[in-house]
Image (cartoon, rainbow, N blue to C red; front, side):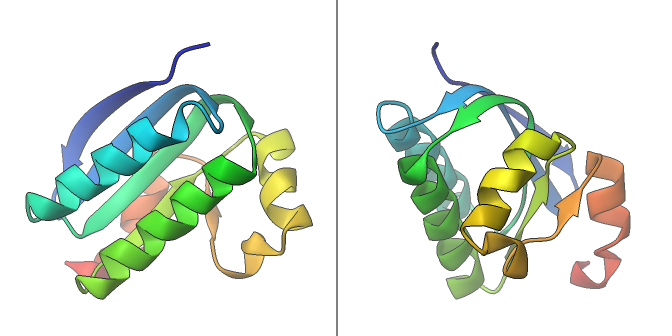
Amino acid sequence: MTLELKRMAYSPWLVISVFGEIDMGSSPKLRTEIISVVNEGHSNLVLDLTSVDFIDSAGLGTIIGGLRRVRSHGGDLLLVCPEERIQKIFTLCDLNKIFTFHLTHTEAVEDNKEMD
């Protein structure tokens, strides 16, 4: 399955909605997108994983790399991840200690208004 990405602005946040699978074959596309939006001046990102069917270790590494990149630019990366099966992958790798899962874009942005 191919990976599709869609951008949406929720100032000061930029939402990147991800559709499909984030794996070794597709994670470079996500990595390139994150680098691109940070280079465009967006350091507060919401990564919406609602429509992600599968994620492997390469995908997790890409998301962690994205977090490091935005934080090095004074921002943050939030996750929208209502699917318990995807959350479980993060939890099994103890990444639930780094990321907080939000159910919607609105919840993620509202819970993090201090970043304005």
